Image (cartoon, rainbow, N blue to C red; front, side, top):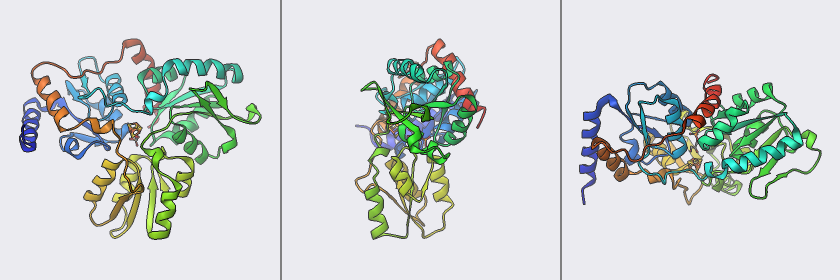
Length: 349
Ligand code: 13P
Ligand code: SF4
């Protein structure tokens, strides 16, 4: 068995040899052992933008999850290869909206609401769902621009269908003054709209999906901090359930959480409702502040964690040998339509 130092040395040597031909973007939720080698770190919006701007790299070894690698593939040129070192690094949220379920929902919703709905999808979705949104005039959103994009959607149509994260959709719409009783939920398993009341009142249809990491945060955890450590500021990601976001002091995207804590006064205490690798990293990056997870049992994103030192080294060594593991390619038709949705977002950054 090779030592960790030997593995690290090999990765550094490959990076040295490939130079600008190789680009390694790393999402903030990745393991430290992988982030060490990232040429850039970011949240999903930043990584999408960096992929689009990077015209030099021949190989983009994406340290993140499958939907991010797909997005990178769609925003880069044909000569650039996007690689995900473990194909099991998916996203359970993205898997909650498949294209057949979505087409079915669209037919049913169109019967109910006619041509009054614009589809928006969180970037945490498959390329096929992004293409669906592109096809019907809609766009992608990320947690850092969701408000802006929802406002834009209402300049286009009276209603919107928000895929696949009901929580980000609900929290964003609520912040914009839309009442909870103006939001309906589409259940893709039961294949029905969950809404009691007059459907004419519906402004937002939320897809019934969620993030398995952020859904683990509860109001009970917040109450415990309020009681036992009242000086702690509670900051959560908007993928958390609505009542958690309402009970927290602050909420925002991964980028917002990082910047807020970076700019906070020394000596302040923070309980953070987001992925564990990031919370731990913030703790070591800002030792002058007390930073803990809001969930005492912690909550890693299992699929993010699939990308580890061994997988990264293996795919880089294979790449140098001329074998790509695993190339992520989105077919032309899907990519064309999905890019429409992505561009509508990127134009409004
Ligand atoms: P952001 O990077 O947009 O904050 O999204 C969080 C997330 O869950 C990524 O998978
Ligand atoms: Fe998907 Fe949640 Fe993991 Fe992000 S943190 S990749 S949304 S499961």
